[in-house]
Structure formats: structure tokens, C-alpha cells
Length: 188
Image 1 (cartoon, helix red, strand yellow):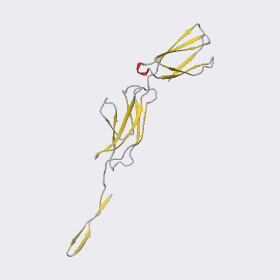
Image 2 (tube, helix red, strand yellow):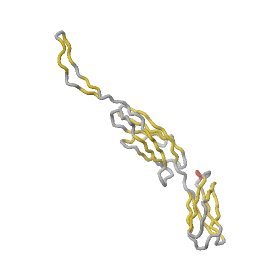
Image 3 (cartoon, helix red, strand yellow):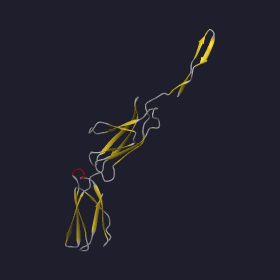
Image 4 (cartoon, helix red, strand yellow):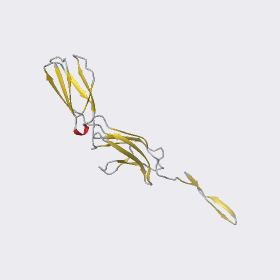
């Protein structure tokens, strides 16, 4: 803060000083920092946006605006938080996010980062052939047609190595399965 006190001057000399008055100067805030953009667990159409508040608030309360590269909604103004969830996004898509610190004097600094939504999981179907083969068929969602999936097949009856599959409709056969065996297939 700045401190001000005043004394009057005349031909008789200087008078007494006034009571000291303080004045704080205000400014727009500095930039938020440590921007992180990531998809929440289990969601394909959302991004979590997390940042650290600016070191300098400009002496006033700070709010935030953030912008996403697509025009699907107006910038959302968020008060006094450093976490937001953006939903209804396109799966398996990269987004540029800009967070701007704002106070009553205007927009201050900003920070920009890139995040990507998750792809949709493939549809998995299982069938048995000749009672000793387990046939796993993956059907990828249309927008995820060129993705690679890592699949793990687990069972108590035998040790099966992880497999990697690529494409839109894939089939993988596991030989020498035991009839009546319990198998679990997970693909990411």
C-alpha cells in the first residue's frame, strides 16, 4: 500500500501533518499456472481441467474464464475454484483449453494446454468353436476405427499372454481352452 499525509505551507511556515491515509493499488491478476487437462476415469466425453490460482490476484477477488477450441458453448465463468469438468465433448478428440484469470479490473494472464478425450471401448463378443477354441471378436466404434486395443484374457485354467489388436472388426482365437472354463476379457 501507499501511505499519504499532507502538511500545509504558508509564509508563517509549515503546519501539522494530517492523519496518515493508506491506499492500495489494484491491477489485473497474473496468469494461472500448472494447467492439467485429462479425461476422468471411465468417461469418453469429458475433460477435467485443473490449475493453480495466480500468484498475484491484483489485490481483488479472482474469477476464471476458460475457452475450448470448439464453439459448442459460451466460455464458462467459474468463481473461486481451480477445477472444472467439461462434458458433452467428442470422444477421442484433442482440445486446446485456455484458462484466463479475471478480476473486476479485467482479464489478466492466461495459461493454455492440450487434452484429449478417451476413445470409446470396443464391443467384445465371445464364442466357442469345437469346444477347445475361444473366439474373441472386437468391433470398434466407428470414430475409433484406427485405434489399437490391448486385451488381457485371464483364467485360472491356463496362462494366456496379453494380445494387441488393431482395426474395426477383429477376431482372435485362443486354442486349447478347457470346456466349462471361466474366461475374462478386458480391452483398453
